[in-house]
Amino acid sequence: MDIKNFKCTVAYKGTSYYGWQKQRNFLTVQGILEYALEKIFAKQIKTHGASRTDAGVHAFGQVFSFKIETSLRPENVKNILNDLLPDDIVIKNAEEVNYDFTPRENVREKFYRYIVYNAPFLHPVYKGLCWQVEGRIDIGKIRQILPIFTGNKNYFSFSKSGSDDRQFVRSIDKLRVVKKNKWIYFDYEGQGFLYQMLRKITSVFIMFAKDKIEKGLVEEMFEKQDRRLFGYIAPPDGLYLMKITYNKGANGKNILHHRR
Image (cartoon, helix red, strand yellow):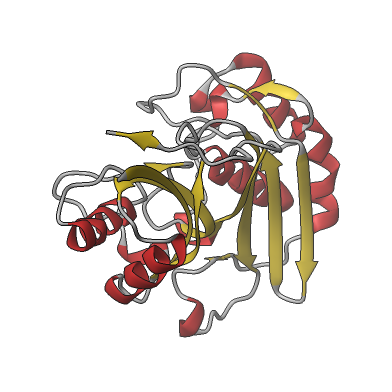
């Protein structure tokens, strides 16, 4: 029997989980998925995720893969997994891909969205799903500093101390801010981002809009590469991994199996 490589797209509400990555003694999305897969196939299965979302961060389009010797079709895998998973984790799609495919390679773009609710009262329904910020936020002012973040930049000042990152140059290919009534959406698109980078950038935008920091400090963060210049970070509640797209042909036109 052939060993198949399955690529799955999963959505989850991250409120109850200590992030994506499996960790000892902590409830994580990857840990729950691997537990469910073990129930299906009666053996331990290692999954590989495309992006390490932090504790409390949500996803509409996280991608992971795993390999298993099975006769099950992708649709069967999707349906059985969804029957086993809790309500806050849902497999949206499953497909069989080239044996050599891994979710972290050949990524063309990752699309993240950060959601802010700009009002003094937040309905309990939205608790844990956004960052509530009181006091009017002028997105016109925020747009004044958007050009500072274009092109390849060293985001060391926007990274978290103690992370696994060793190279800090990143490119935000598309950056948009839109306000709809009381909701503010910050959209970030790029090939990859540092751990907690987008949450720190979002907090910079909010603090700048509320006159808590000056434009010069934002520029200084890029010039001096010093994390101590700005210590605020937006909560994980408002961050969503929306979609991951891959370079054309990354999945392989012809499915290649591996035989034992």
